[in-house]
Image (cartoon, rainbow, N blue to C red; front, side, top):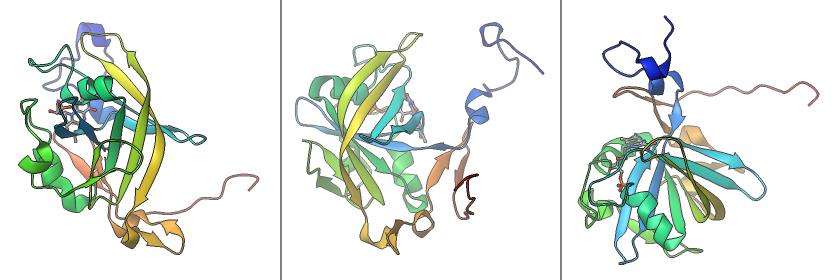
Length: 201
Ligand SMILES: Cc1cc2nc3c(=O)[nH]c(=O)nc-3n(C[C@H](O)[C@H](O)[C@H](O)COP(=O)(O)O)c2cc1C
């Protein structure tokens, strides 16, 4: 089949986010100007540069009690910082709980009973037991086409790696099994890896 997005796909559900898969999940921690902590998963997320290390995530649609966006972008607009927490398979249910359309007053760390720790380089909470945390300072928020689409870019200013995830000097993803997002209600988990040598290496 072929379809132009502007004309609709004619399928029961939009296939778009099942096409670009699997996507890593950035579990984004932010703090409001009022000091309240917030946590929500974003799978329009990736690393975008090495030196200095940079990441991005994108927020789509808005919450009624926010100014045309969701809590995460609104908080980052106010404070200029956020922390990306990496999601392991064992955290899938608590991660999912933090994705609900909770009021801005709700601290999802408390709601889902997730242990917090304070970041070292920014004024923000992080998921204490996550395999890795990336403390980020906002570099830019880009307004994307559409009603409430924003891409948020940040420079990583601090990296936490859980001790048991380090093996022989490498961050060993098979030690925690990263959770990834597919389309619809589907996820996948990384339990296998293989290596390839690039031409010329
Ligand atoms: C695995 C997963 C990935 C998600 N990815 C995104 C995303 O990339 N962009 C987005 O706007 N919402 C995404 N959501 C929905 C948000 O998590 C949800 O709207 C949440 O309430 C936003 O919280 P906030 O208002 O505290 O930022 C995702 C939800 C789940 C469960």
